[in-house]
Length: 64
Image (cartoon, rainbow, N blue to C red):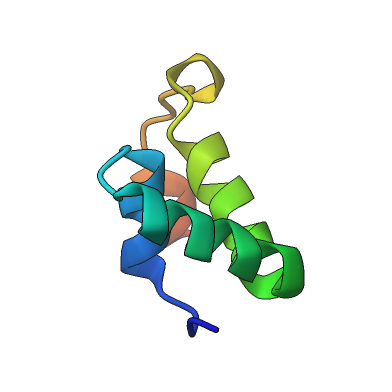
């Protein structure tokens, strides 16, 4: 059983893993809530349609 690996999650989403590595990762995702949540978050954050550019408001940050 593989251990948690952020790098492998990203490589999986980028379709850079061979078949054996993909199967190993998918088996790991069945067992690991942390990686399952992480891959969901990574894929969601990469979705350009969900991205909304919001410039940082320095005036508000300085008033804290």
